[in-house]
Amino acid sequence: MQLKGGIHHASPIYLQSSRQIHGSASNSIESVSGISSDMDAVIDQVMQNSSELRATNIPGIGTKYQGKVRDTYDLGETTVIVTTDRQSAFDRHLASIPFKGQVLNETSAWWMRHTTHIIPNALIDVPDPNISVMQKCTVFPVEFVCRGFMTGSTDTSLWTHYARGEREYCGNTFPDGMKKNERLQCNVLTPTTKAVDHDVPISPAEIVAQGLMSQEDWDATRKAALALFEFGQQEALKRGLLLVDTKYEFGKDPEGNIMLIDEIHTPDSSRYWIADGYEERLADGQEPQNIDKEFLRLWFRANCDPYKDDVLPEAPAELVKELSRRYILLYQMITGEEFVPANPSIPPSERINSAIENYIR
Ligand SMILES: Nc1ncnc2c1ncn2[C@@H]1O[C@H](COP(=O)(O)OP(=O)(O)O)[C@@H](O)[C@H]1O
Ligand SMILES: [Mg+2]
Image (cartoon, rainbow, N blue to C red; front, side, top):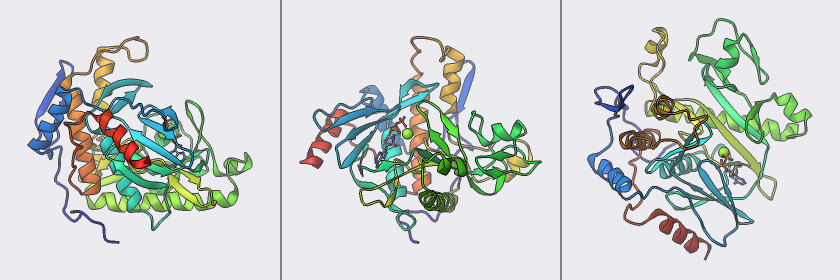
């Protein structure tokens, strides 16, 4: 399959020879290279004007549901998803990150456009860099988590379970003697149910036995999820990234066709590592290189108690800017295309509202 964009170049090593910036006495982070000075200036402009997209309020178009990152409007036959610049962790809002919403929305749209040969998806239109209009589907109450590596640190992570001695997980069996971050013999699906505030691992047999999905629907979506994941890994590797794990959601359209919904292969729904040097680092017992947001979480942990404090301190501007640069760099690495920022001179809520008005008119 031929994809558009400059996807044939080998990726430079973005984290080498980069300068250090300092967030606080106890933290220092690397500033990634690969972002143009023009792009840096646009990020500065957004931060000076406080024109990050923090929240939306589109009157009179349908019921609003506000998630941690996205605002979803139910229009009856369609679902409008606005991805904002909100950054959350510890179940709290930490900061607004310039262009994060655009990066997530456009990364997902890019993958949806390039995966229709595997399964149809609900994306109808992208009328604004932060907006996806989707066909409304009946959502299967299962999150399709795909994994290619033995990793993770949260309660539902594969490595957490394996390190405790468990060898069976969500209907998969793993051999003894595996190391953290090692590649699995083959990709696996470790589904979870969509519980209100936490995800619960479940096996395919339980999914069918509990009536969450029919066997036929399960078989078809399982196949699609693994095929999407394998395709995602192949494409990511062409541009120097390992797609480590990800999460998909599927639903049915009114005709009963199974569709990919929600988002696909974004930096928020997926883990990406830098492919270059992965084997050497694994052999040396080092963690793989990634371009991630862990440094912002660490800053909050060092400077307040994010689990208990009523009011959180404001994140340092240089850390917010660095996270913006990392999201943009990830967009460019994942898609192989240059990131074109939304016009920073128009206040984003104005832009969003008029894009929706034009779209539904
Ligand atoms: N095409 C679609 N049809 C119906 N529901 C969808 C579609 N795409 C996404 N959704 C749902 O929209 C919601 C988006 O919410 P999200 O911003 O992810 O918040 P949360 O933090 O609750 O996950 C999810 O519940 C997802 O299942
Ligand atoms: Mg979600």
